Image: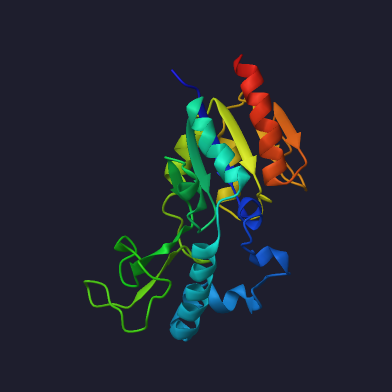
Length: 231
């Protein structure tokens, strides 16, 4: 039986595919204050602006390509039972070939009802238009968990972390909760690999191997290490 390898990925892995994050510029995301485009209050105040913002982000995601780190994680499925938990709203893990991906913050290539969050629809275009409605008659909005909203997949993610035989953290600053707390669910003795140019604080954890490199460089190094340990 393959060992369960649980991976938590953050913005750093998608950044190498050209997707910017709001943490790049002091809370600005593509020139917008995140509170103006990524909260329920922003949607209530100016839904057209929020819709336009995410239509542009969706266009960027659809034009982006998985990078070597995404591909490396997908390739590890040959050797491990890989479960990816991602904070990212893109679909680059799936496009790289990963079979089991839990999205904590939604997927931008889907729409959801603004009345009932579990009514989700795949999108065939870059745009959700104002006036496009769900089956309940409410406006479609991006399938994205905004600041101030519940994270519906967090309990499932915590259960996966508790089942890990190996754990990898790639490209996340561990600054956004509740996702940042997931590492605390990983069993005490499980090897934990952290890949990031700036290793986030992980005090109180044992068996931590730190690789202070970019996602692509770090995954290349770690893949070799994991394969050596299998031999």
